[in-house]
Image (cartoon, rainbow, N blue to C red; front, side, top):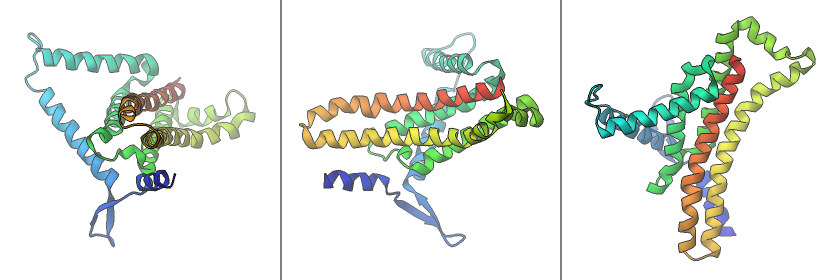
Length: 228
């Protein structure tokens, strides 16, 4: 059990990779560096996959890419509705980032989503998007009036919900990713080496993708609710 506690503390500890020597020193944590790596990989893949596209004679690579993009676009369009379709690119970007971030542990990197600062930042971005979508759709007055709907007595609850939504998004993503790590560490302690490898297919791959899906799905539902 002490080994599990030590492993958990190591995972929760945000290591400083280097420090930028300005304003008294700005620490750059491991989760930030891994995020930069993910961004660089995604940018390079986007450049490579979108080269030499053709309307008349699309290749196999282009067909696969268009199928994947159209699939994601149609999924979010059905979820978020026509009023929020301009926010689909953001949702697709976040889904790709969280999916890769949760899977990057298979390559020996520490997933950025194990850092609560990362999940909190993602949640804050999403809640700002949700509230701005409501303001753009209803106007400032209409957005303020929506807090008193369906009746004025629920005004405190609706205001509190603005703060509850990002907290729930943050803790759900962080808690599930960290919980998967704890379960895998327990399995490594009590069963042979081959069994954790089997469960890794679920906790490291399937569960990681599920958490990316849940995060963006809930964000899309909240945007739909704000723009109705």
